[in-house]
Picture 1: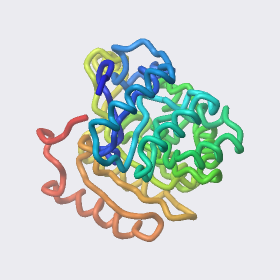
Picture 2 (picture 1 turned 180 degrees about the vertical axis):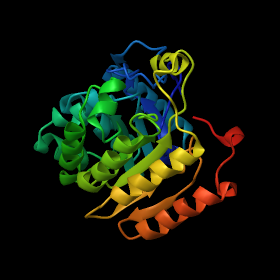
Picture 3 (picture 1 turned 120 degrees about the vertical axis):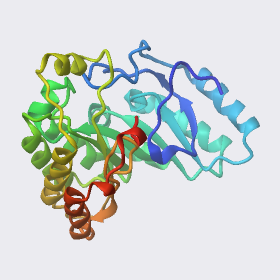
Length: 290
């Protein structure tokens, strides 16, 4: 396949065919995220994308999942996305699901009818980085969206029949906003009604704005015990009304958790509390990464 620059995908898309529908991220201003610094954002043409799909068809006997990258390919209008989805399904009739990265405003700009059309054309899951349920944390990291906007977008997509997988970042509030970040993140998980939630842990990239804040002392990171306490607060406040699969199995995390809220909350909290006194349950730093 032809790829421009580094290509990223969610952990659950490890076995998927990855196709770049856009290059880079249309926002590309979050202080903690280095993923698309080396790229100038642009939308690829239908002909470019279709050529990649056809090449992939020649090279793969079977493709069960397709993932459209880069950072927020859902920024493309429904008018541009529908032909891509239809082409993918025509070339890969065996494909069970097509996924895509998106921002909340990508969803909010599309009507309910457009979202349902995307679902009917094969779009099965949208991955959104919510990062934090705290408005102040999102402001400090220059997310460009509010928790209310993100929650509303998740609900709209889920109501249209498209599953949403939402990522939050442990430690993003630092010491100063740890409790606010944890409590508000837990509450947002309970309110938004996402099908999936993933927790990853902040790992500061050299050269980022947040790395400069770390150097000057403006940002103070959480140690291992504080991260576990934060995780306890998140789960305690995650009062989900519908089933939500939750994972903290990203390579960046110190403690690996898997379960479904609300049913598994007591078990997950028990695991977290055991980890507070038994550090052998935590992943060593040498095994952590992005």
